[in-house]
Length: 304
Image (tube, rainbow, N blue to C red; front, side):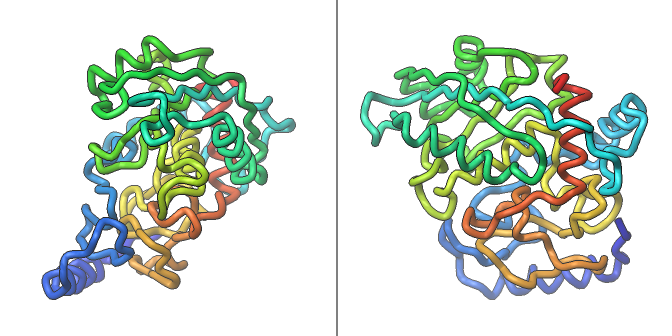
């Protein structure tokens, strides 16, 4: 990716900072990206465990590329001869009580969520099948689980099923974290297999709460689980998200800001990419480069 000249970054930051000082405070669902560059949506990138430092990303990439023997981010890299076998999905509904309002998601919503996953991943060669679902009533796990918390550890130790190639989804109330979900990366599995999987808000499943109630937040988190960074990873300079066919973005987007262009490099911000913070109705695709990277990462780290 092209480096953005320093003067452009400073001018953009100054403009956005001035605009934010003049603007009223926006409600949580606002689509005005009024921050530089941390808090740009209802979900803070600073609170997102899947936003990593450029140094940490570089360490991971050095190991991945060396071991894999190829640039996993190159959009022209050869795809695997055969698509991976369907990914087994284990859904763990962790509710406050037995009611729908307490997060007890019905089987029909779980089936719909897997359908949404398959629709989003269809062009990539990945597919998903619901292998099983369980329900646990535990108010503490439901309301108090955060990334790295004792609740998360106890919950996953008790509920996780399968191996590196099995996708475990923990469905609970994430509102206390300010996030709709988070995921582990495939390169983290070997060091901590019990922690592997996705945590997502029950309100972000199909039929849930706008603007993330179409089930595409799980698609985004599954992208992380298969080795993708956010499209705004690293901002405008450096290797960014290590994908050549996702245009650079200075920071995360919310709402669906058509034509937004925060970097001098070619291409407008990829607001329609699943790996952004935009509304579910706005996100609709992975790129060819992202599909290639997921194929290589899944084979390398998950044996898929």
